[in-house]
Length: 293
Ligand code: UTP
Image (cartoon, rainbow, N blue to C red; front, side):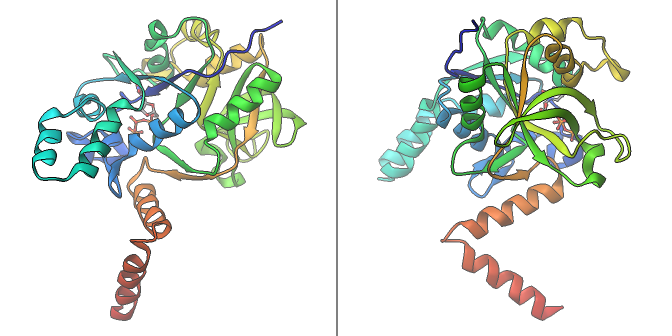
């Protein structure tokens, strides 16, 4: 009988180069670009913490120091805010470093997502863990990682978050083949990476939230690197599902893909429209621009 552990740890691979966002990401990590008043990475960490995670592990690389600084205390800044009487803001800053316990591992060369996950292995013993790709910011009543944890608690195994995409979009995602086994839940039988619409086995795409068995590390070690020396997570997941159950869940929520300029812009406007303090100002700007056209 498989022992199901409560979800305690979450891995964030943040060592990618962010080439789709150049030149902005030449010197600033993509994860540190702001969405309203917080960096993109903050949203993912908040989701992991509200799903029950107490340990956050970042796989970082060169020029990512600002992520470490962001989740550490800034005593100087806190003292300054205290002297100015801005105690609310001081406490808000202090809370960032207290959200969880943070650890950092380096990926010395960006050899792909699979390789980045493998770099995190020393921080995970034998327990299931969350994996969040922070580009995907998700608005939802229940945090998506928490939704995956619920499926894991009732069925065991690994669980991947799925979204139904159009046939035209299948070539941008890993697509699953599987059998329904509950409301919005599939037992996955195969995965195809970025299939053309004619080759796609379904329209269920894997997005940036996973709850993974520690057995994934062994598979990541044995899958062969593809073009450019990259190790693909999808290849390791395919090997995993031949040995252990892997489920997919159509998550409940709205995904904002912040990995591209247009996606980030849409996310910023969407969040501003959801914010009662900003909504009217944003609508005013758009109305004025429309009148000027
Ligand atoms: P992406 O596919 O979005 O790559 O990686 P990227 O480098 O961040 O961005 P582009 O495509 O060049 O614009 C998905 C996630 O995996 C991490 C990224 O930081 C991102 O969170 N990643 C990717 C690594 O940590 N290491 C890698 O070698 C590749």
